[in-house]
Length: 403
Image (cartoon, rainbow, N blue to C red; front, side, top):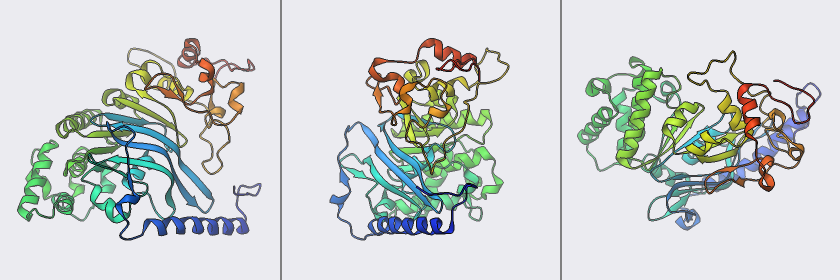
């Protein structure tokens, strides 16, 4: 762990030591990843459940910075079943996007690296471990099997190329046998599929000539051009008004059913999760704190963080003076505590919370939570949940009351 001065700055000696250590680690990982002609047996794996499209198993993705190692994803495990939508929810910086970028192998390297764990991708007749797969092989999987709708279309689309040329490129890359006329026809079809009326005219436009909703539709067309098995939607409706948001979500739902794909929906909007998801994964500070079906998470939230998220959303027909907000802030990602990461913000903590990070507890076959309150059959009472929802929390020690 990095030693710092009282002012919070690293000494030059300590900074050099960290940089040297980072180079040693990343050089070793890069050498392994850049190998040529890697035998398939090295990255072949077996799905734990063949009904899953992808399985994240104890995934660790770190960023080796000059100030220390940032553990963006620190032991994440969950599954995306075939034909289902899994919503990954949590506040900014909790590791949602980094988890999805790990699956796509788009982590900013060499600083960003998958250092441990497996990402098992189901190809039907076999399965690959994305954490070990070489770059040249990953090129053929992106687009064909797993595709991503990026968060901000204006920064994802190239401003100097026409829309049609950018969609053409995706199709040509994965369908080399198609002629230019066939590729352009497929582009026009995809633009029509995502609800763009004047598809021929739009294909000749530049990104800046389109509205936010139109650009988002183009991004969806690019992502679905090769009918992938898994669609990663990273905040697909963030910058859109509610009318366009509803249209985009409805479009995603229809296309998922049409090509029988799975969706990994990343968002911090609980309303979107409630409408779209079959399963929910709640992340906090790089770890999964709770996961279950959408009914289990919304009807019976178990982790104090999930309860806080539910309390912070507005409810139709309920008038409040001020919305609830979770107190405190996320711990420093370079210097994470050795106990539950949420403890210092938790208004339901108990004596056990001073111990090591809590293990995952099964509340049902599908509902799991990492919290000491559920050890030995315990739980958070309905009264405690109600106190959070109504904004008057009594601290466990009885020393203070209120937020």
